[in-house]
Amino acid sequence: MYLLDANIFITAKNLHYGFDFVPAFWEWLDQGHTAGILCSTSKVRQELVVGADELAAWIGGRSSLFLTPDQTMVPSMQRLAQWADSNDFTPAAVSDFFAAADFELVAYAHAHAHTVVTHERPNPNSRRRILIPDACDAMGVEWIDPYTMLRDTGAQFVLGGAAQS
Image (cartoon, rainbow, N blue to C red; front, side):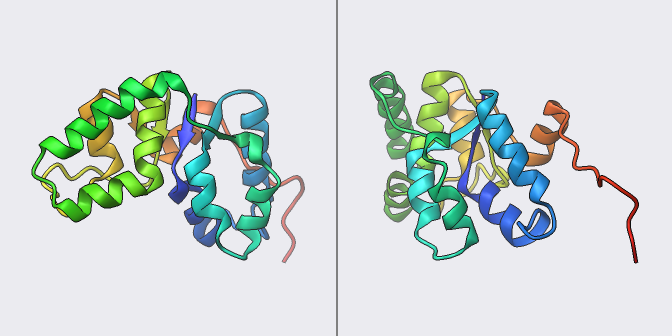
């Protein structure tokens, strides 16, 4: 299953798949969730609903898309926390990582053998910020970008008729 980072939703809304011109993307997310191929976590949901915008409204009606932490995550959370604490990250980077949805996202993916989908790129030399791909690599969690996910799932957003000018 694909586990979506908050930046997937935010970037889609703001850039590539606006609600007004690519509604099929948002319908595809609903269908993908219903089919059991994608989801996200409750902490990602918390980050997304704070905005008083169209994305927050869309997210608000889809609580089942966002999974809550469970007991199977505890060993993964402990291992991930140990990794974050034992590297040369700044204290602020570690604190931010634990507070943000990223920690829950990677731990959930590890515990449930999911693939994380993010726009972030790895930077193993970063010490001021813990990046999702680097945390995934440390935990042996697969991660991909959203375009790979769309291709892997065969997603297509095709116009229904001829374009008019």
